[in-house]
Length: 480
Picture 1 (spheres, rainbow, N blue to C red):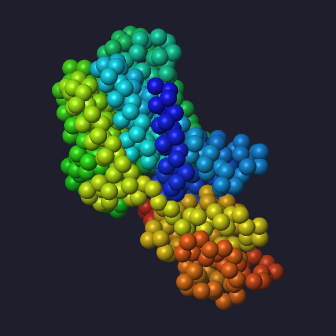
Picture 2 (picture 1 turned 120 degrees about the vertical axis):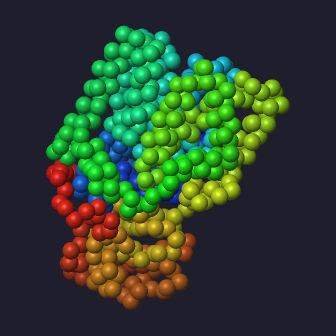
């Protein structure tokens, strides 16, 4: 098993090193950028961190990786970004390990080995391995707790199970229905011996509430304010609405149809696999009932149907059938990772791609004489929401990019405000600038001479200027 997990880590880390693409902007702006801001100082501030709709727990976890690198002087993007990816890839191994334990407890050794392989190398799990996507980070302790439920109720098992369930709620409170199902399964299996799990889970949840109180000034602020914005004020509809059945279509498309076989595997083995079915139904129904939907929200369903696929192949197929399933799995995973599954690009961005703007930011990070930076790249077809400005740039200098206040004024007079300009090389040198380095289609330009003092456009700050939720003032008091 450990050899397979080592290969699973290698696959995840290799994908992480080969790409800086972003599937959803939250994975970078909400956590990587905020961890950088906490440890190193500079960082853009999205509205969620003014209004207190996010727990600082994920960003603090990433900050714990960055801080030793800062102390030891290894504080360059070329070092700390691979380090963070390596840690996240290691944490993501909770999925294949838990899938193995769950399948071995519920089905058979053959199903366990297949589940281990499927969850180790399925393209979505590999692609998400190095990402700080909160839906994935919340699914890891959820699956870990589900695996522990089927173990003997020794004290360390029950305490760990409860703590993991509490952590899942802190990281992603929308997983509470799935957590509740797992908790009921634990009560059904362990009876009165479940009480250490209840105590441990409650303590972790209270700790999450206390962290909110410390960071925002209100207990459980990340839950209270998020529910208020998304449900009370119905702000979620501004990000798009989809029909109730949307996730059913998405999961089938992104699995190349294999999720149907996985669901069949769970149904055929329902006498043993009913806890997995119950967790899957709770997850699907809750997120389907919400108007705004994103593929990442139901990340937890992926390892569940992969376990079902393993059960189907192991319990109801002979050698030829298992080989056919493995061949179909391999083909779908390879095509999925390269975004070649039919209709996949309608629901998923590129899993492996280089974003030249991010590469240019990291190139500027290596420059020693940076005073201020203007980003007018606009060539990758990537929305600026998918950038991590200071996590890539690192310098504590003014940055004028499409989502910042002062961008329009700096763009109209770059020589007045920016020492470095990132722009398409085809546009030629801005007046008063010389070429420094070319990054693909982009060129980094350096101002030939700097004025005696630093000047910034009126109203410039490091808050994102667009997409503020409401005009009302936030009710929290941010500490960081």
